[in-house]
Image 1 (cartoon, rainbow, N blue to C red):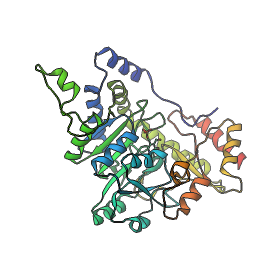
Image 2: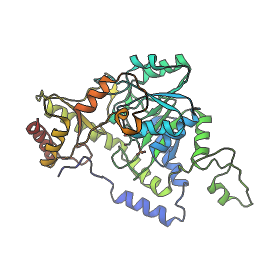
Image 3: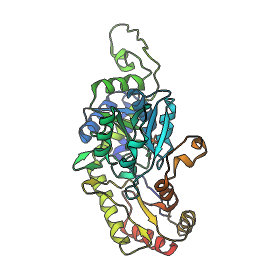
Image 4: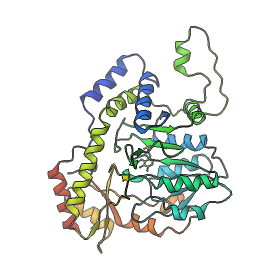
Length: 370
Ligand SMILES: Cc1ncc(COP(=O)(O)O)c(C=O)c1O
């Protein structure tokens, strides 16, 4: 079976996690601080705040951007459910806007019409490795006095004209789950250039305690901390961060290999006119967390996915959040491009370690199934 992903964690990650365990400190601490420093430097942001997942990072980012009950957040429906769930956690309402049918990311031309007096934030998703149109979206946000909180869960390393995601939107959230560019098991990172936002994120992720556990443990005197607001326990552990530090040492190699595999799929599928391969606008640097194809055949998406599985090739699909039972009550703008993409695109196996042989098998299986 060729899986959708295969882990590439190795002995160096195992040793780093073991070192953290043996060090006597496993909570959020020095290894987390080091991981944060490496990610901030890599994306070019002033601050990186490690959290337990991208979902919890999005929750905190929205709170730090001032989102609360009664507010609206403009976002795509063509995403993972967590994008909208994080908005719901704050008491705000997601307002789904359609995607560009070529990039599968939020269509900036449709965003302006969705902005109301209750809109607080535009939340683009840089989906499966391709940056959202942040130049257009940040300029719309600036015109309306809104913040941009970006869900870049799958897209660490992606860039627009050489500027990496994480340093473009007001706040950017990344994921380190097992299928992402880097993994720490579970985990996330929130990046921002705003000192106040970063301080607020650090407070909120650790119960909003006025003094951290590490600082209290280090102090030679009694410190009685206070809790100025209701916070959360969204901390990353030093065991996870130790793995993340090792993974950051390989990030360039990982991104380069994913790009090579993406280009190779493009070449292998160039003559297959029953699928459309991914498109990236000029200057938008894809990292191919996933490789999606649009099916141009009379066979249904589910049929093709089932036939692929029978040929030992795993596939996945991205769904439309507004179609899920939990979101059917949320009014949305017309979403024809989202619905078409959700019904006709599939994701092919994509991971560092996918061999040329396996990639050839995936393409042969796909042609057979079409
Ligand atoms: C677009 C998107 N947003 C958010 C998430 C949630 O990330 P996490 O699992 O780290 O909470 C994912 C994960 O699959 C995702 O793909």
